[in-house]
Image 1: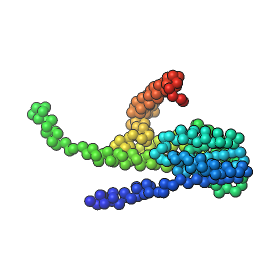
Image 2 (image 1 turned 180 degrees about the vertical axis):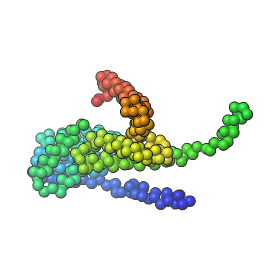
Image 3 (image 1 turned 30 degrees about the vertical axis):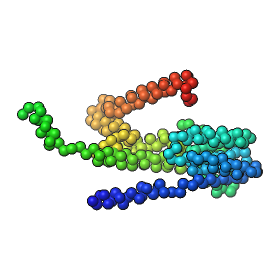
Image 4 (image 1 turned 60 degrees about the vertical axis):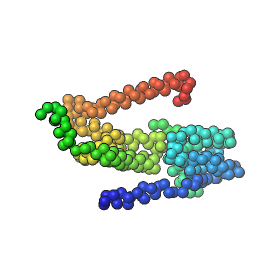
Length: 136
Length: 151
């Protein structure tokens, strides 16, 4: 009986993860002079239903879009990535775009949102793009 | 007493195997081991320059190292007794199989003892792992060259 009570006591802790708000959050770091792009980027991410979090870092001619795909769709990550990448490539042929669903890129771009020094952001974005290509 | 009698008595005396309990234990402990593995993955992603794609290798290495140390200290055996398949199926079980076989052969010397015993249990895992990987790759190669799928 005591064991049973203990088990039921822990049930809410396990279920607490299911209750978080299911709204999409999109954040954009925009230091680029290209106007009107901000809304477009936000629109493209918002259209992608499989994504629950998106960060776009936009400096000079670099655009880094890091997305977090809904947990149940994790196996489709690569396809979603390719689709969004294609969408961005068509929309901005003169920009260096990288779309990634990797957690590392999301984590690092979240930090970049607070960064004031633009040169630092450019360096970091280039470093992250290199990192995304890494296979080993 | 003939064989049939013996068998019926034996079945009466043997306590029933608690399948559900065993499955639950294996599920819980296996899940906890995998959660620890995932935490280590995030550790490598957050504090080092590893991406989700590349963090798999150091994570496996760390898990194997932890399980090897636990086996050496005799703690993994206790976990195995409690969790059964839950502790044997993850990569830590593989590490346990290698290290415990090595410890067992220690008394017979380094070469003939440790060297020849180390893969006694894990050898089949490596053999069939390599074999099935080769086989799957072969099937994929054929499918790609036929144009059914892409790499």
